[in-house]
Image (cartoon, rainbow, N blue to C red; front, top):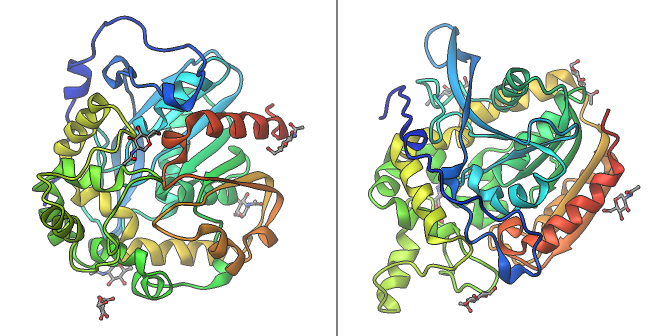
Length: 377
Ligand SMILES: *[C@@H]1O[C@H](CO)[C@@H](O)[C@H](O)[C@H]1NC(C)=O
Ligand SMILES: *[C@@H]1O[C@H](CO)[C@@H](O)[C@H](O)[C@H]1NC(C)=O
Ligand SMILES: *[C@@H]1O[C@H](CO)[C@@H](O)[C@H](O)[C@H]1NC(C)=O
Ligand SMILES: *[C@@H]1O[C@H](CO)[C@@H](O)[C@H](O)[C@H]1NC(C)=O
Ligand SMILES: *[C@@H]1O[C@H](CO)[C@@H](O)[C@H](O)[C@H]1NC(C)=O
């Protein structure tokens, strides 16, 4: 649908307004509402990639965007976003952790200003995403760091920690438990049978063109549908359809006589506008790269072939208890996550899917305490 392209609008709009919040938070009510994404300038790395969807694999280069904040600090956190999200999901961590840490914040291939392979199905395995991040770290001259992930980004961080313990000396993830290849391969459809709220992944995986048509037609609704909090009212069957993403919200709007999906306040209007502008650049199609059968199967085969499914370094999962997507703690027990994690801790937090945005004070405290377990060299 959209081809390989690369835009720099964001950089052109970079402003020189007054410096934003460096103040510590007094409470969660004082989120970084004045966080201005346009004040941050992206860096770019030319990274090796493989075009794998054609008749034979072809080496290519991708120009990938990332942020490198406080580059003189000795300890690095790598903050990895999910879907439908962006580096701005970590705005409350940027303002808090940039005082003591260097922050490398990737923009995944296919999102915002990062290029992508032409093929969606099989050119974007998890090891490709991990390779993108180590390429950015190379470019920045960062040997190692702690991987912090949420949503799809948590899956990337688990694989980063497993496959590159030399680069990722700790892993701190939100929600998504570690699922070792020993558990076996499951298609999106099989996962949706286990947990109906994974059905949207069947839609994004099996009909990316249709899903992109729907979401590109109303990018703001696409983002807002997911950017809800623990106290939000959401349609019962949201995420549970494999033929539409916004359909349940359209019904909800009709039933409740609303003109649009309610703005939850989890982010400021400026951050929402920035996200909309970012998703306008390439559209949604290329952001479905984590959900395709080919990529998922290649990922599984790779992990299985390497055979080492345990992570020796310090790891942590923060389980949100009001997440409409899944009972992550229940899933973690089912797949016996803790059996594979040698230095593992967990905690819960009473939020929906994005605790680092919904309850940043609590989140930042939990993360900063746990960071004491990591030996940065
Ligand atoms: C798993 O195996 C790969 C390939 O041999 C290796 O690079 C990696 O360091 C191993 N991971 C762990 C956690 O030992
Ligand atoms: C899609 O959902 C319907 C209704 O829940 C179900 O019958 C069907 O098997 C699902 N299709 C796939 C590919 O999972
Ligand atoms: C949810 O809580 C926030 C405060 O954290 C508040 O601003 C918002 O109005 C609440 N929303 C609803 C729908 O109650
Ligand atoms: C997706 O990739 C997998 C693995 O390479 C391949 O088996 C499958 O045929 C591909 N499917 C499509 C629709 O291209
Ligand atoms: C390790 O992490 C736990 C949980 O966050 C924390 O309570 C503990 O203080 C940490 N240990 C060190 C040495 O910082």
